[in-house]
Length: 469
Image (tube, rainbow, N blue to C red):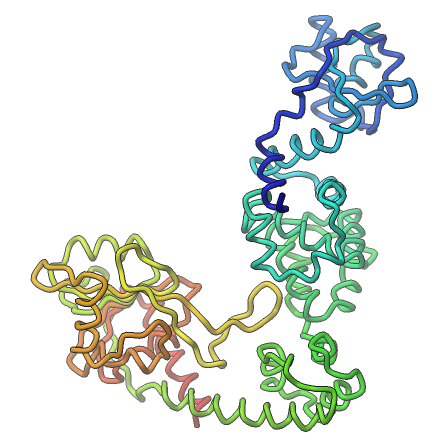
């Protein structure tokens, strides 16, 4: 049975199927987790007992037998409240000791997808999960983020705080430093977990130094801001890519302060570099990287004077570039003739492609690696008739001067606009304006719905001109 199948079965399982209902003297039950008597749940249960001489909770107290004693698996607060209020016996259900881990994992992870759990508790349960699956953190560190998401995604939630803490837990020094920060009042939000993981993979020692600071953190944004300021440790990243430690140190001395070299190291696949002449190989690749980047920047060089007008609800335009599903859907239903380019998502029944961005436009993923691929969907409609995906769409692209292919560069799609095109642009903050400029004919008339969009495009064009000069 695969790991994913075991996880799926765990969530579907009934860990109480082999239960035995019993009545136990309260003094024979051993609490397995101490709870603060000011805990709100403990106080509520105590009040229930005082008012009704019993607990109104429907969930049973679950116990196992170890060395002739009953140990609590689930229900420590209830047992503490019963002992505190001197209740002599308790109805409980006993399960085989072999079912203990299964019940704890089932209870915790089924509930953790609905509401946040304590950071340290999640770390403990992550360790229990790995034991249950006979996996080690060393095993999982060999997996990439996609593999972890594929196997553990349904169990943890693909983009949740829980999944991020699970990945943090794979690095013993990082999880220890995070626990120190928790002790100092740090609130590990999803944003903070993501920043910890991302920066740790770039510069682990500096991340550890910040997290272990002896200070009381006021809120997650304070710690997040400090982590964001950490620069990647290029020497460390070279070593992580199997470059000799001495060679990595010399390369960092040669290119000290060179931001382009930093971007190159973070994006380059250096696995094919052998043990001999590593320095020369990397320098040669870096020079090629710089040459290619200049070519890419020149190919998307912006016009000195973009034609942009602000119009909140434009009516007349023949091309929409958007990153909003709502805007795309509304325009598609309202206009009888339109070409729509949707950036960052795969739209059903459209022609779906990938854009290969220049390295200068690459964005960091959570591991700090530069990612220069983004999804893109194209739709077209003329006089109310949709251009269907397949041969018809391929013919449409060809008629526009675009070769139908899976992966495009930005310049490949320029023929979709012309110097006579009216282009409405509606982007969210996640999509770079530089991408749009790279897609368009430099004399096309651009329409944005507010001044913010106009400023974004003008700033992007200025940056492109600066980088390509």
